[in-house]
Image (cartoon, rainbow, N blue to C red; front, side, top):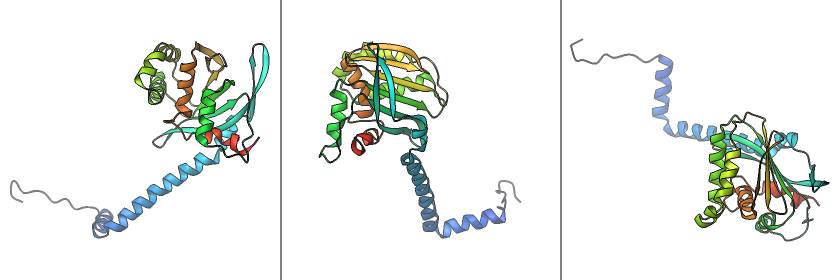
Length: 233
């Protein structure tokens, strides 16, 4: 071999054969890749709509105390917050009262608007499905608030937003629980692992916070969160 000549390093026979097959049959390779990708999507879709994990974590009704009286809240729906292919948290939404919508011509949009406008006590219950830093949680919630408000609306509720974010200072582990309650006077109570971490008053803040999941730019499939309203009385 002369100086400057490149040394030829033979490929392993099996790798060489696979390489040639890909070069000779690019369409076959592409179809196989697409099929594999589709199978992944189907697997995630099946997991999403099975609801097994959700139903295991969340009861159909819960009882809370308000003004020294026990009140029953009913489940409106369940979903999972996903980003790309990662499950972030499972969540359930509860209302103080449910309206029987069976057989009525009620649009999803009207249901979302009603949830954001009515004065019934509401609760969001989350169970984290992976470890997350406090910074990641804050960034996600802040992004959802900004998506569902214009600049002027966001500036008006900014003091409440900052107070809410400051209360989220702990990293979370898989299976940790985060709960948010919205009371009729506009007060929002948040709890981590059953312990209250913030109490913030402001109807506009409460509405915008809820819009993260029920607004036009919801971070989840909001239809899942009202499924019980449409399927049962």
